[in-house]
Length: 179
View 1 (cartoon, one colour):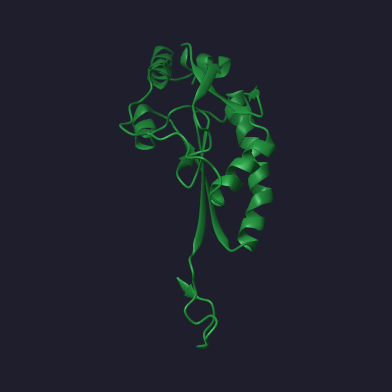
View 2 (cartoon, helix red, strand yellow):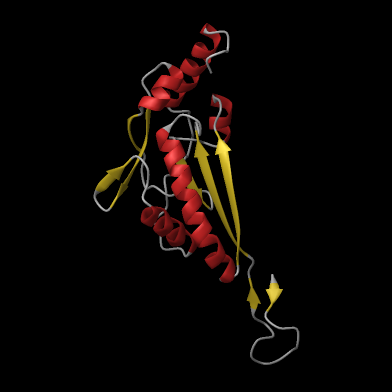
């Protein structure tokens, strides 16, 4: 905590300002092949490039990280529910997980895989619109968002189990040259 001023005065000597932090995490399966992951990455980069200076101006420290979920162990470590996922201060920006078939991830794993879609203003998007991401991040930072999806008693979803098993089997069946 830092004091508002260094001199003792009646108006502000006891006021303390908390250090304000914003942690934005982007969790994904693939940034080489998957159109949803690549597209979401591009949009999120643009939104973060716009919001970071504004949040810093308002006194926030902004940490932005990208986390590739490469195997089941990493998925469990991060309590990963669906790809792609965006979390702000540990909370998923989505209220629930909605998924549809993802041809790219299905091809990567040689199995049927469903990946996240984003619902915003009554429409469904494979890649979230900038407005949605900006609104979700700012709402979370300023405490106006409803709690995101909570992972109590986390278990790796069957969909992700199939993805990682299929990816590993495909890798093994071709001698590791195609993956």
